[in-house]
Image (cartoon, rainbow, N blue to C red; front, side, top):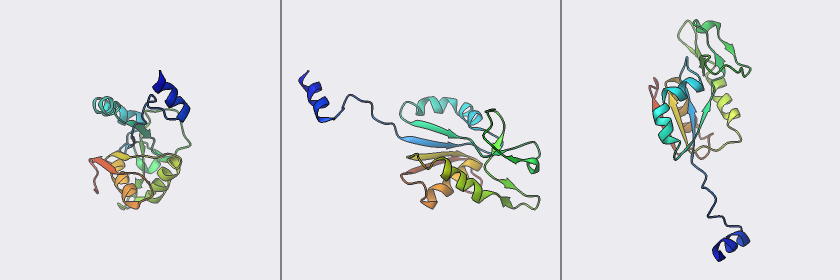
Length: 148
């Protein structure tokens, strides 16, 4: 009882849960945050015991023909395939800078300890960590990143 009174009086709360380290999760092309979350369900459940996972939605809604893609205004349908950037008919990657800036803007008020990315999201995760624009990121985990 005395210890609780001391903790309350000093403003120290050993009884409050510790904040979990946060991981930003970036899906691959032709996925969404929901699809990615479901695909890694087993790992996600285990990670969620120790980490707070935040799945970010890619900004580009994709159709079967990626040339018909449109920038997203924040639709509700979680299973719509998305991407971070596109590739033109001549093989050049387009909208990469916009993807980078989109993640920075969407996470501006957040702090992450790590980034987890699959495929296109893995490449973006690596670029974000190397840029130094995501303060506090100490680890990057990628799978299937074609340029990593």
